[in-house]
Image 1 (spheres, rainbow, N blue to C red):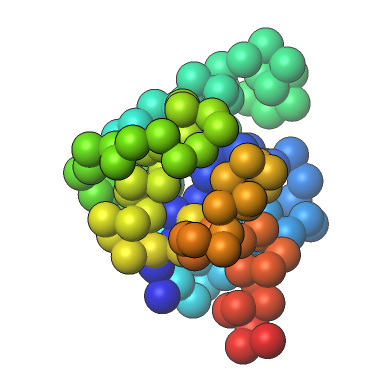
Image 2 (spheres, helix red, strand yellow):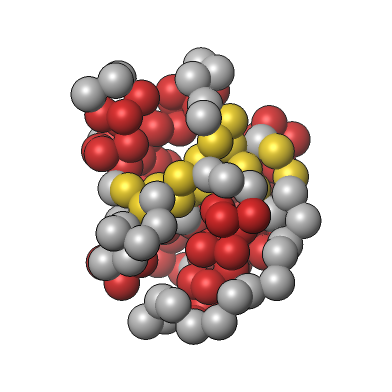
Length: 135
């Protein structure tokens, strides 16, 4: 199974080490699924991790190590062309295109993306954990 994890979920995994997002990252590290990343996803993550409100929560070196782990541990896929405007947030179109191109589940907490779950394989971190558990 393959998954694209929204940068917001990745950030949540750092902020709450016992929450569902952190459990998803732990399951990836345990080899339970393949993580697909792209340069756009990693750039967005790096930019968000540099925001002042997040810089106060963990060291810049910790953020850089996390991005490096994702870059080298995940499958680095090329950024596909976006396929129009399906999301209420045009900035998230690349996530939809990446998940589709790589035949991956998109794991997100964004309501505007989750609203597309009847058309595309998009799940919350908790629902994805259930899928990994075979529920």
